[in-house]
View 1 (cartoon, rainbow, N blue to C red):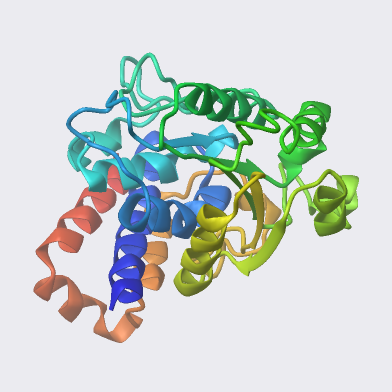
View 2: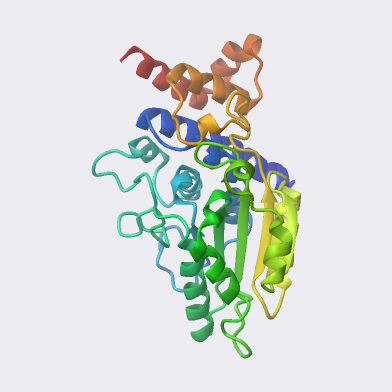
Length: 304
């Protein structure tokens, strides 16, 4: 089953997210874990790209506007063959192309530098319009964070999106996805600056809006199908997600927005992601040398 394959890849990428953040000692686990299913569905079931030729002109583009969750993007890119997975542990290290926010000049395959929140949708509009003007079949996917959409520039772009390119070149090659995990830097979004009614706001600007479970591969794929079939306007998808998805002590907790796990926490998180009970953990590791190597690597960090 296609969904089972995507779910297995997403689990693998969750493990890699925990691994690289622990090595870095800093970063953003919560939002990386909430967006990984969306990125997995895109990179392994939707996008047209050539990992060995990242600048292929006909490639589809992904703009991760919520750039602080780039560990999730690095995980899928490594799995897709853009660079070796062994390089993931260089996250945030001096001289590494895997910076704490996306850097298109450092890593081929990154489409936009998005360290400053609120700019990704504007960039995506420009990319989509340029592709339309060039008669390209390529599509653009922009992923927004929910706290990020408190930025005024997002709403300027939201107002412009359905109008740009009209009537001859509408931006129906653009799909915008909101990773709606409902937590931002230090609290719940509703307690800082409530976004509701999200759906009605985007509809008021002329966007067709779809609401989905952002962790359900079937929901994600059907919404992406619908967006691709939509003509005359870009599409907006509200993906309801859980911050820290897959790790019980991180889920729905603002504390894990920007705090890396300690090695012992990381090993517990990986066990939970893989769905292995504590009693069966040793036997599991004996049967899975790849996970065993990661766990041994993290355990060695604990001793440093």
